[in-house]
Image (cartoon, rainbow, N blue to C red):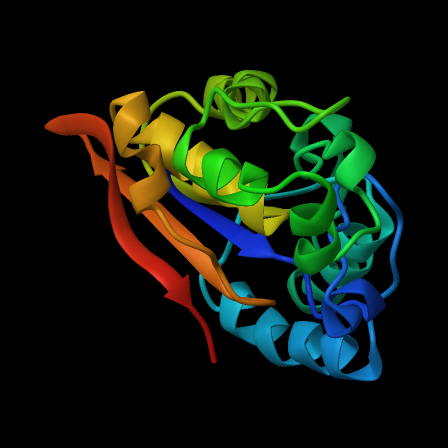
Length: 205
């Protein structure tokens, strides 16, 4: 089989999302709404007949992936390289709190993929660690027919990974915006056009 389609699903709503706190590598849990989101999206992804299901090892992603696993019958492969951006000293804070202590830093972080929050990692760092996950998925498949893989991860990581897979210039990465809870990005490619193409972004039910 050949990897022809990649679905990048963000986890369901968490308690930190509701509180407006930045999560990064901190653990958080799905709310009742988040679990309902995952249950609702799972059969939609199952209808795509994925061949692989991979998840970040953070609990919010794993719990969302488990819902997809129940609908598809696929095992969940957990991979720490799919974690969200490590936000260093910002983790657990709201954007307002960050702005109070680091005036202007949020805007700088959002506009410059090379900029690193204090004690954290840049968007470039995130893409560098996540891209090999897709490369390894790709290596599992060799030749037609086509296969689909579902990756369950985090908003910032997904935006960066889409930018990297599309080979966008780094200065253009901020043009790829946020993605909602339990919504997804989809990339695909053809035999005669082997580069990844973006076929959907922030898609959901």
